[in-house]
Each structure stands twice: as structure tokens, then as C-alpha cells.
Image (cartoon, rainbow, N blue to C red; front, side):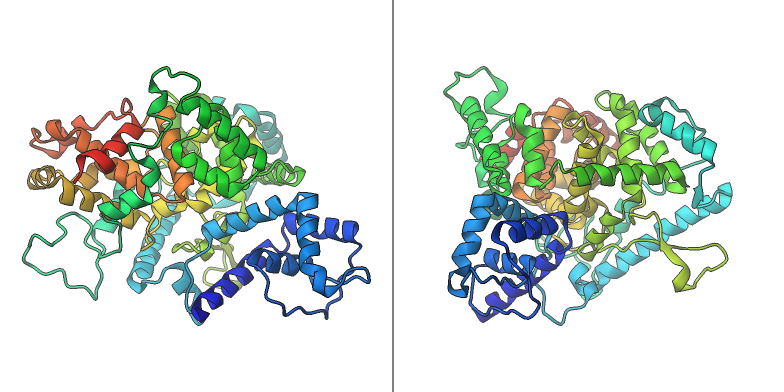
Length: 554
């Protein structure tokens, strides 16, 4: 019990520290001072045990004091103030956002590296991979004799500003640029990773994991998955299933839509997250996602986006060419997303300059790459993070943004939603870690599901040299973006947000193999297996997930 209280205290202190200095903190303190005429001396202290929310209020507002407010009524006064002013929901949503990304409680003496990733061999593997990626970037920089960053001449700045909304019409020569790495390169690193303290054994047995991933990690088994995704059960209504045929207004679709409007009216992030587990109505999805992610339409947010845009206009980065190249190779050739080419450039170029993204490295196993001012190589005082957001784009990176363009037509709002989606979820798809939603765990979960519940198919594909993970990895590392039809992809991402987990990607990948099992049992090579699964854009996500989780697998 005492340990739980200590963990709660640590979590509260962490969240308070994160919220201090935010726009919400400033606004809340300003309104509190105005409405309650509160002064804030530095020496007032309260020792009364309060709820976590009220503790947060006290920390955020500072120690409260006023001749008109008695200490014994302070708790109720704060409650009344929050409810009457409408700040209660805003504060709750801000706290809920921090809880969504808060690392698991660690020992107070744990190092920052341990908090980022508890397994030492994972940290070493990630560091080695980062060096390899940075070496690839530096090699390209040297070969092409192009600086990592340069200030644009005034004429070039004016030209870029004038065509900001038409960057897709520009055709720069990108023939000499290449992606720093592709998903298949990353997969080979994951396949070769081993735990030096774990002896797999030379002789295969029934209990061995016979897939490509040979790292022992804690993953959910089928009963645990069924419990975790219980809202997806066959007897629970789902958008993506029940709306496939016309239904009377009194049935699920209409009722779910009306409930969604009530959830939005309440402005409650936690309620919205629970709601979207059964899917979002198309008309409400943009607002519900923004509510879950605690995205607001504040003037400060628009101003921040404009500042990032100004940074893009003023400075040219080598990573900009990688972004251009990736968009041209992926989204521009996609039947669904080619029309959003301009938006993709705007969002991704601004994202590369956003130093607020660096905060996610406190719970990301990765570390931001460093570069050095020319002529000062190796001198830490002249080291700079490159790119400024610490994220080097890879082949397919733009596909994290593309589906969001269907929901948001304002670049500033689109940018905020993508940034929050990235720092919550997408970064885990290209980082080596032991996290339950990390790509390593997803790969292991996918292979374990197939080996355990579709053993004939798994062993057949393994014997012909067509390991299933070599086919499914590209789906998972992109979150299925570019592979599913957009309406189905958005239904899938509803559940990612709803469950605050990426595990559903591995479950869906296994479900696709189960659906195509009869065809796959007839193939005799990896190429043939890839051909069978080359086009999954016609598949319906929710029926596949429901049947795999609750009907077929025993």
C-alpha cells in the first residue's frame, strides 16, 4: 500500500512538472487570481491529504492564500472554482494526456536510461542502430557535398513562401538522394537481436518460438487479448460491422452517433477514448480524435505553427530532401493520398523543426542524433541536435501523416494531431524497445499468434522460406497506412486511440493471414506468398478482428 502511494506521489510530481509553464497553467493561474482574488506567497504549505486532482491544482496554482478564504474550506473552494469556471474538464484532460504517455513507475534511484528502456541489451541495440542511420546520413551528405543545414538566400525564401501552398507542383532533382533506411533494413536488425543472458537452446522443441524474433518479451496470450479487447466481442456493436448494411435509426449506428455527440458536449478525453473503442462516426471522428489527444484551437497553437513555418522558409535542411523524396515515392503514388501532397510537405517540414518533439525522448528508447558545427567535430559545446526534432525520416514516414489529411483541412490543426499521434504511438514503430506496443513486441506477438493458433500455416510458410513476418512487417511498421482502404484504416486507428495501444496491429496482421490461409497453404515460395497478400485494400478490418479474436481461434 505504501509503495502504491509513493508511485502515485511520483506520478503526480511528474505530471505537475510537465504542466508547469504550459499555456493551460498560465491561463488557470490567471483566472484563479482574477476570480478568487488570490495572492501567492512563496512560504504557504499544506499538509492535508487531498485527491490527486486537487494536489495538482495546488501545485499548479501555487500555495493559495486570501483573507477571505479559510484553510479548512480550501478543498471545497477549489472544487467549486474549477467546476464553476469550466476548468475542471480542461485540467482533467491535460492530466489524462500526461498519464497516457507517462512511463511505467520505476525505482526512485532508476537512471534516465533505465526509464527510457529497462533492458540494457535493447539500449545497446538501439544505440548501434542510431549510429548506423547517422552514418548513412553523413555519407550522403559527403557524397553529394551538401551541408546538413544552410540559410536560404532572400530570393529563395520569397520563392518558397509564395509557393507554400503549391509545393507539390515543384519538381526538384532528387535522383541522387536515397532513403536513409527502409523497413526491411530495420527488420534485419530486429531479427539479429539476441538477449545475451538467455539461452534459446540448439535443439528446436514444441515450446520454442520458431519465428524470426528470438527475444523473450512479455506479450499477451489469447485470453488476455480477448479481455483487453473485450469491446470488440461479437455481441458488442461496432462501427465497421453494423453499418455495412442499412439499419433502422433505432439500432446501433444511430444510437452510437447520438452518444458520440453527447461525449463531445462533455469535453471529456477519457470518455471519448472509451467511446471510440466501438468506432467513430465519420462526421464526429475529427473532433473525437482531437479531444482524445487534448488538441485545442488556441491562438497560441496557430502562432507556434506559423513560427515553425518561418523556420522552414529561412533554413534549408538536408532532411528536407529526404522528406520530398519520401512523399514522391509513397503518398504521391497512392490513389488515396496523392491529392494531399502539399499538406504532407507542409506538415513534415514543420515537424522536422519542432523542438517540442524532443520531449518524447524522455520515454523513448531512442536518443536524438547529434551533429557538430563545421570544424568543431567532437567538441560537445558545439554539438547540435539534427534534425531539430531529433527524428530522421525514413522510407514510408510520410504515410503516418497521409490518412489524417482526410480529417483535418487546417494545416495547423492537422499538424498538432500528427505530432501528438507521433509522440504517443508512431515513434514506437521504428524504435528498438521492450515496450508492449514497441515494434519488437508487435513482431513477437504476431509470430506467436500464428505459431500457436495457426500452426499448420505457420510451419508450412516457414518450411518454404516464407517467414510470415517478412510479409507483415511492412504493414505494422506503417500502421497499415497505404495498405488498407482509408475508411478501414481510420476504423483501425480508432481502436489504437481507444485502447491506447498498438497491439491491435499485430492482431490484425495475424487475422489477415488467417483469412488468406487456404491460398497461403498452396504457395511454394516467399514470392508466391507475397503475391497472395500483395493487395489487402479490399479487406474489412472489424469483421477480421472480431472473427480472429472471438470466433475462429480456440
